[in-house]
Length: 600
Image 1 (spheres, rainbow, N blue to C red):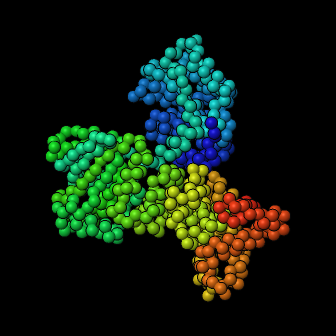
Image 2: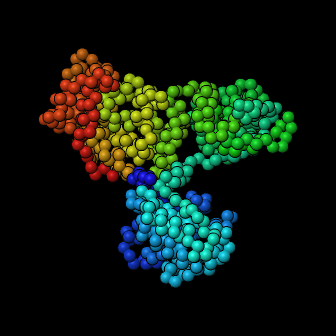
Image 3: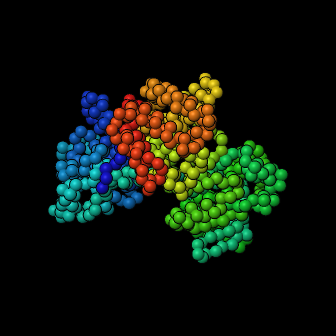
C-alpha cells in the first residue's frame, strides 16, 4: 500500500479546511498555540471526511460526530447510522507516510472495549457530552463497525494483529461487533476526492413516442421525444447531462446551432426531419407504463453523448424567447444500455459525433485522465476546459484550455521536437493515439503540476508579447515566434516548483524569473539574428534541423554547462535507435537546468 501523494494530500487538506473544520466541535483546550490547534483540527476533520464518504452523510453531520481531542482513548468519531442500524467507531490518522502503528491500534482497541462496556471513565468532554446518545445508539444498533482511516503506507502487521485480537475476542461479549474493520486507506481517499468533483448522476424518466426496441446485442430503445422535455432535462441537470460527451454547448455562433434555433422559431414541426437526433448512454433502462404509441422509460445513469448542441441550443432559445411555443418540436432519441463498458461507450461517442465539425483533438475528451484532471483542478477553483465549449468563459482567468495545457506541458519535455511541433503540427499533441499526447498526459500528471506549467507558460507568453511590441523587424518576429523556444529553456529552471504539491504564486514569477527571462531572451535573439540572412525566425522554429542545434547551444550557455566534461561525449554520441539526434544530450541538459526557488 502506498501513502497518499503530496499532491492529493494538498487537495485533501483543502477539502478538510473548507468543508469540515468549520463544523467541528471546539477543542477543549483553547490555550494551546493556534498552529497546533489548526493541525489538530485537520486531523480531526479527516475522521469526519471518512465518515461522510462511508455513510454518505453531510459534512456537517460527519463533523458533529467527531470526538477527537488531545485526549480521546484512540476513538476519533462515533456515528450512529439509523437506516442500517450500524454504530460506526472511527480512528483517523492524517499522516504523510507512516503506517498505522501498533500503539495507535492498541489505543483504539482500548477505547472500543471501554465503549462497548459503556464505561465512560476517562473519556474527554466530547464523549461525555454525548454519553446519553451513545448509550442509546449502543442499545439500538444491530451492528458495530470499526473504521481505521489513514493516509500513510497502510496498517502495520502488528496493528492488524491487535485489531484482529479485539474482533475475535469473545470475552467482551459483544457479538454485534463486525469481524472486519473498514480499512479506509489512501486509495479510498483518492477515490473520494475524485467522486467529490464528479458530475452528479442523472436519473430521469423519459417519454418516447412511436417507440421501438432492440434487445440484442445491447438493450436499446428508439423513439421521438419532445424538445420541451429535453429542455427541462437540461435546465434540471446542466453539464451533468453531458458528462460522457466530447463537447458541451459550443455557443450560438456555429452554423448548426443557428439552424437549430431558426427551425424552432419558424417551423418547429419539421424539427425531427432536419436534425440528426440525440443519443444517450444509460447504465440501466427500465420500461414503465405506456402503450406502443407512447411509453415511459426510467433511465438510470443517463448521459447524452450526441445531441448536446441540439438540447443546449434549444434551451438557450427557450430562455431567450419567453412564451415561445415549441410544443410541436420533437427529435429522434436513441437510448443505449452501456452498463460499465467504458470502451463501448467511447466507441459509440466517437462514431456518433459528426453533426458539428469535429476536430481530432475533441476526442481527447474520451480519455479518463482528462476527467481526473478536471476534478483535481476543481478543488483549486480552476475550470479545466478539456471539452470543446462555447466562448462564454473565454476571458475567465481561472480557465485552462486543453490545448493550452498541452503547450505548457510540452515545454517541460526534454525532446526539442516539441518546440517544432508547437509551431508546425500542434494538433498531434492532442491526438490520443500519438506518443506525444501520451507523454504529456500520463497517469502520473497531477492537476497542480498542470496548473503550474500553465502559469509558467502564460508568464513567458505575456513577456514575449510585450517584447515583440517594443521591437522591430526580425527581432520582433523572433519574439513573436520564439516563445516556445524560450519557454523550453526557461521553464525547465522551475521544473521542481512545477512538480511540487503547491501552486506557484503568480505574483512571484516576475520577481524570480524576470532576470533569467531577459538573459534567455537576449541570448535567443543573439543566436537567431545571424541566421535571418538566410531564413526568417518562423521558418527556423518550424524546422527541426535549425531549431534543435539552436536550443542545444542556448541550453548549454544559459545553464552554464560549457565546461561540463560530460557535454563533449554526449554531443559526439550517435545512437541509431534514438527517436531524435542527441537525445541523451538533451536529457542531460534538461536534468542539469539550475533550479530557481521561492516560487510558491
